[in-house]
Image 1: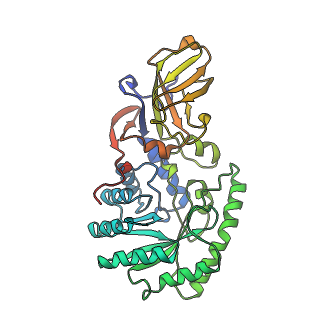
Image 2 (image 1 turned 90 degrees about the horizontal axis):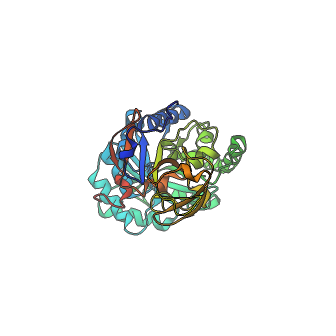
Image 3 (image 1 turned 120 degrees about the horizontal axis):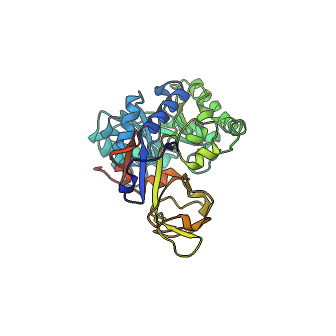
Length: 373
């Protein structure tokens, strides 16, 4: 029988539930990401999916120097790994502005940036940085489609951008450009998805023309995530910020068929009970795989056929199966999560697979909300 790609030598020694990362497949995905972008300097990949310094370092080895993060801890992880630019893709409200200032002071060799979408928070950030005699980059967060965060695309947007570019108004902020996230476009047909992405991006291109016509510097435009990556990669003059594609998952693998990324992270789980004929219980509960989607969209087993997910609780996943007698308590299954990002966040470390064998562990260091800052 031909060996399947995911099979791990001595997998009976791995305690479950476990998350394993396939090193060669991560490298494949990095190379594919660079190839789609055309050059590594067009990429600002998001680190929120994996939260591991080792994967940042693999990208650095591929020539990628800029990264995007969701938290202060993720940004510090990138700094510790050797990254030189980190865009924190949030507006830093409350104490987070102070944490950004401390981060910039601790890692002066790294350029940190964050988002703003209103004058109040721009002033809050400017005043906080002033107390530390620091300057930081900001990007205007543009709400062109998703309605989750950002300044709406309206006449006030250009005026807001102009005000941020006025160093007299905000002496401790340097307005570097625009952040445009359109993760709501997930049509499986790429032509249809690209058409929707392009239509939503049209007013952003108009805004860029306004900025340049006003004599301001050409803005850096950071756009899209993994769903929009293959569309924005065809657009000149922008930077792309995919993230999930580094590990990939069942959800995007199903909905983004044109993308060449491979599943690089799998879950290992075992049968812990056969509670009644036709039923198997696995040790893969809410605490081991992301559970925000319906029961049938949480995990896809690669070495188990003809099953139905019946229920899930904190520590248990119950399946209905055919040929119940063929399965034994303790039997191991491999599964790909539907949503890898929150699944990674459930694990303190992952086991790393090379050439079909476990070769070590990588800590999910930025799973923590705070490293040192």
